Length: 256
Ligand SMILES: Cc1cc2nc3c(=O)[nH]c(=O)nc-3n(C[C@H](O)[C@H](O)[C@H](O)COP(=O)(O)OP(=O)(O)OC[C@H]3O[C@@H](n4cnc5c(N)ncnc54)[C@H](O)[C@@H]3O)c2cc1C
Ligand SMILES: NC(=O)c1ccc[n+]([C@@H]2O[C@H](COP(=O)([O-])OP(=O)(O)OC[C@H]3O[C@@H](n4cnc5c(N)ncnc54)[C@H](OP(=O)(O)O)[C@@H]3O)[C@@H](O)[C@H]2O)c1
Image (cartoon, rainbow, N blue to C red; front, top):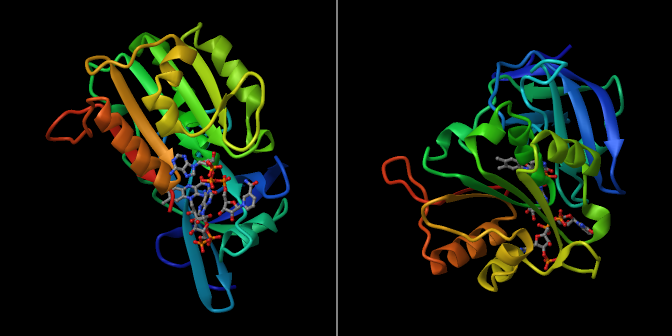
């Protein structure tokens, strides 16, 4: 057997869920260190002698009932990519290397205490870390409003509807789910892209929630072009990027 590369542990695929031809979830059991909701770790496999590793966010809260060493990942296969097609081929019982120490700063404890309305803006697979955050106990006591925005190309790319419904009931009316579909008209969802919908106040209209410098905080996650354009839109609306040394109203994580 090959030695386990530095910083990784050996994990085992326990389950997988197919959302569509390219979008899937992997459940992996691995002896990783504790993590915070919103963080990511690495998944890695060998391609001959070369180890290919990439970052993936955990979809499940570390304190979920199976414990923090049972990790769930939402992954899209990019047919031209190096690692994701290999992950797509993994079946139950297969082994995969996992980063021992999860990391990342897109977590609840980075949000300023003054924030009362938390907007979670995602594209594609980046809904994952937000689902983990929304599972946090007591979140409904800390925030007045929680808005989960999921922007995808087609209706077929929407995921985790059942978990979102459960969260909506658990969070006592504080969670609003706003699907955005860019390439199809689908009733019950907004059409377009996040930055345009923000600038046209369509997200405020859909949620009946005004964006405020004082009470709103935005996390942006996923496609780097969305993160860039949404950051510009939020700046146009008078908000500023949040820094540890200078408090602001938005922060982000790029997936590539
Ligand atoms: C902090 C962090 C967390 C991440 N979490 C996830 C996750 O939970 N799930 C996930 O699927 N990916 C996630 N990614 C992206 C992941 O690390 C890989 O980049 C991705 O799986 C592609 O790897 P690859 O080797 O197949 O292709 P590569 O050759 O590395 O990339 C091919 C191209 O695929 C596109 N791409 C990469 N990631 C995505 C994506 N998620 N959605 C749509 N297009 C993409 C980009 O155009 C990229 O140039 C995350 C990245 C970072 C930095
Ligand atoms: N999902 C599919 O049906 C499909 C099909 C073929 C290949 N793929 C592969 O999967 C990857 C794409 O996955 P994905 O669909 O999950 O992610 P994606 O391309 O990031 O698209 C997700 C959402 O982000 C939006 N978006 C893109 N750029 C934006 C910007 N600048 N500002 C605001 N929003 C923006 C898209 O809108 P727009 O639709 O307007 O771009 C879409 O609604 C690609 O790498 C591709 O190889 C996916």
